[in-house]
Image (tube, rainbow, N blue to C red; front, side):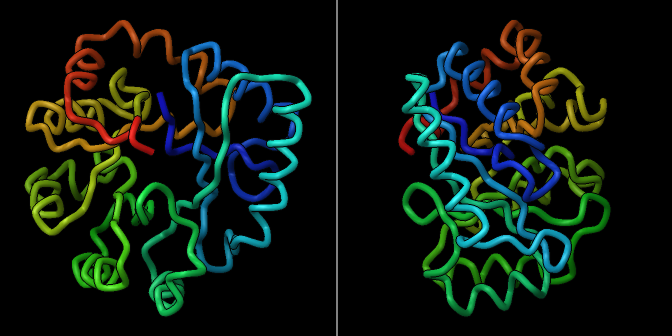
Length: 226
């Protein structure tokens, strides 16, 4: 049980505000059976100008607390990169990017409009020796309007990562509908909590009892290889 999408580094993005909240979430994840959490702070131009220097020292603080309090969970850090011109510049030095697993990199886009350079960006990511993972495709309006885009991206070498809370309509009915369709088509490779706060985890019980959660768990997911 590996969660590969969350926002548990305090005070770097729109995730947890305090170390105490991060620790409470990690304890609850452990109680749910998770053995590892790969937390992924936003990186978005000037808005969330994060990098290894802002993320990794705070990651070490969490690791130390986990050891001190003897919590049975491992934590690592990558990042969730917004696909924009700033990210394309970062691709010029891919060895400095925060990846997970075998050089996988988590990316997100505008929720409303498909980026004009989406496919070019994916090509550049793969050319840099990285494996693109698109965060929560079910939440993008442009994919809700045309789910075939998701299949096209998979054919281009993109792994799709589903948010668990989408399965209960937490974000919208449209997101839930697309999430179910992607599961039915077996297009999902990874799954994450995308946990930003303790409220997200409190909604997990409903997810775990759902029909589509059981279908999701029957897919050949990559989480436990991370």
